[in-house]
Amino acid sequence: MEVWNLLMDLLPFEWAGHGFMRAALLAVLVISPLFGLLSTMVVESRMSFFSDALGHSAFTGIAIGTLLGLVEPMWCAVAFAVVFALLFTYVRRHTHMASDTIIGVFSSTAVALGIFIATLDGGSFTKFNALLIGDILSVETGKIGLLACILLLMAALWIYSFNHLMLAAVHPALADSRGIKVFWQEALFCAAVAVVVTVSMTWVGLLVINSLLVLPGAAGRNVARNLRQYHLCAILGALVCGVAGLMTSYYLGSSTGACITLYLAVYFAVTLPLQKRRS
Image 1 (cartoon, one colour):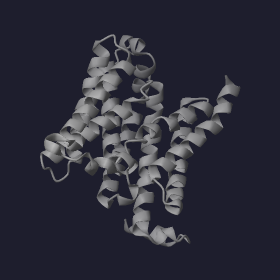
Image 2 (tube, rainbow, N blue to C red; image 1 turned 60 degrees about the vertical axis):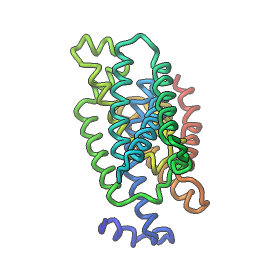
Image 3 (tube, rainbow, N blue to C red; image 1 turned 30 degrees about the horizontal axis):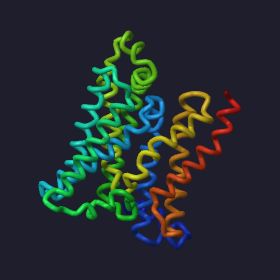
């Protein structure tokens, strides 16, 4: 953080003098590539609402952790979301149900369980309202380090098994015929999304976190001509929109997650005619 603070001291902007903005900007620079990278697989796997269901499961995990009196309920949420993702993958691979149906079943069950636990014995749901909107300005330095480690792990995962992940997502039968263990590839991907969604939801907000895992990949797909361009457009688009959203939220006093999402929506709208022109 000392090097980061020295870099921030060089900037001639008023906001760079605030410690919370320095931490928030660093968090955005780490979170945005994560969402951009994962969004490419989310779009290709046609699991756009999966992250929304994971957000519900993470909320349930936090409610369970709070009920148990844990000092840091986020870890309970991570564990619950990973189990949720693995169960989803198992049901998806061992039944003939459509993915959107399975996601709907898991999502509704998770949110109902979370509300039940949160309101158990007359408890109030209002203490969880902050999770719905998120507040990236409250990010802690230690959590940024955790996010950076997750980013490095995701990059290593992509380098090591991207071809298998993509083939399993696009054509599971062909992947099976080539000896790729599709279930474990899908489970690994779903678990990775679960960890990212759970760790970042308190800053991004449950109401918009799904859009951050869909819009970068959807927009990048509009303009990319190959997989390399696809990932580059998704990651760079997420980075630019993330920084722009943070700056806008600072000057207008609005939700950072919502601002980032709106910029990503504009990014998608601008690239949509290019996709039509190519088709």
